[in-house]
Length: 402
Image (cartoon, rainbow, N blue to C red; front, side, top):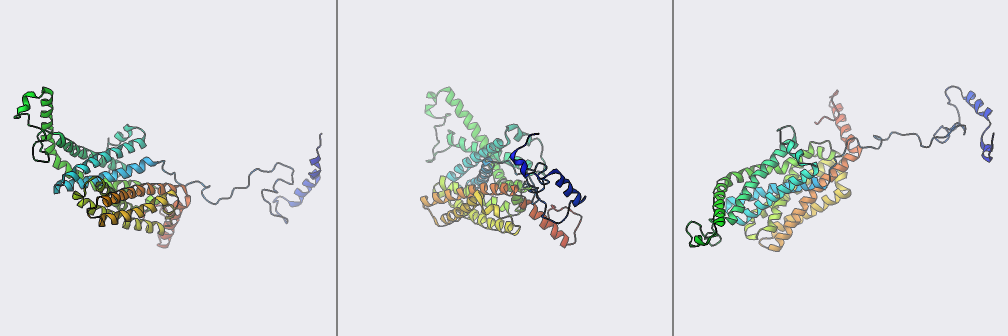
């Protein structure tokens, strides 16, 4: 048997056995409380390397799984809102005869709805996943209904955009002076000098122009009718999850998204269109900014009532939402007081569009942060359970919506 200098610290074996017999079977008695530091039996066996586990929460883990979304979903929400508002502006401009505003807003609607769909497909990973959602219509699924709304809106936007593009190049359409944009191939004296391919192209353009002229008005109406649900369905999509911030704000979130879409789309038209034709866009920008401010105020108050307002006031999400509020006020006042100042209109439009983007990204990030902390999930459930107990309702689920 080998020995070492540390053996002098080890108590004799007989004393350990005597102490065990003296304490009895329970192991309880006078003396210092047993803990993880002295539970090694006085040095006779190996001590544990970690302390005893103490339950303080759901093992420090989130009760629900946060959605694995990144900036592509924020872009999808923002671009979809811009597309919706732009379609509404385009229809109004077509009715009131504002050709430049109609053309710019139609092109904006088509571009943004295409980019919104591309962002969604990029998040899904493969295009066929988006197509699979179109195989059936499930009215109880916001994702299924939203996919159909997005696709139908894109179809109408494609028709109005094609009509606008053909209008720009058609030889029979009058230009700004009232003359045909190009000489008529059937009666112009330059017909004999025109190549056969050019004449065929002109014939195709005329045929497309006649067809799209008939489809233009119905497509504009369809675009206007689908604009409000396109702007709001993404809010329903977020609220249909178990993410605490989104779920508890399910009644305020659609108003936030609709106001945000209105001010973003109107703001872009203040940037792209001369001020002589942006009167309706300025009014929509002011209305959208006011709606966004009121809805965000109610959104914050409701979350504060449920002790869920911390994620929207702290971190990156809180910084983005705070900056969005400042830009919304500045852009709204600028749109209201700018008059026909081109510089102020452009600055106001950029401020409103940026505020809308920050609002969408901030709400997405705040929701994901709320899903990571168990207290945001358990707290509202305990409160609902307590309310049911006080109301005499028992035997129901603690998570059932009131």
